[in-house]
Amino acid sequence: MTTSSAHPRFAAALDALGLSELQARIRRFPDATRTAAEAAAAIGCELSQICKSLVFAADGVPVLVLMDGASRVDVELVRQELGAGKVTRADADVVRETTGYAIGGVPPFGHRSRTRVLADRSLLDHDVVWAAAGTPHTVFPMEPKALITHAGGTLVDVRERTA
Picture 1 (cartoon, one colour):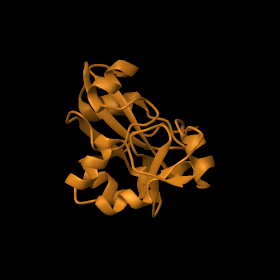
Picture 2: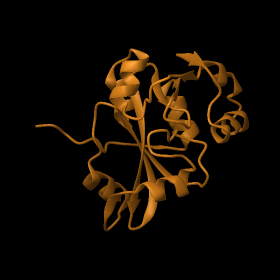
Picture 3: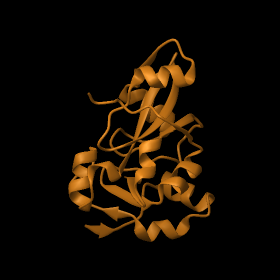
Picture 4: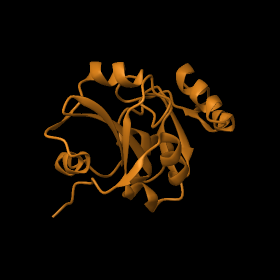
């Protein structure tokens, strides 16, 4: 693991948000951290401390859902939250077009275009969460409330409930 700068778009977003100091806290791993499990193993944290940035399409309009790494998004709850007719997982092209990043490296903010952001309340269960820094090899730590605020997220309960 090395400390390295993030994706250039994400680095510019950090600067624009007054978060330049986060650059020094970004970690780069030789092996990909595309999945929450890979990221948690590389970092040495709990799976639930990973903040997944997932893009869905609500009636064809992209929406970003921030979810803890140990949970799954309940698309029906997302649909209800948005008042949408249909919610589906966005394909790789829509993710890249909307965010400017590839799946596995999508950060919670610093995207190419503005999208609605829903942040699951489960993220608040930790003092620090880790999120992608624009590449499948880079992550950064941040206090969840600050992360949600910088992402422009609305706090919701959209986690799939296990029986």
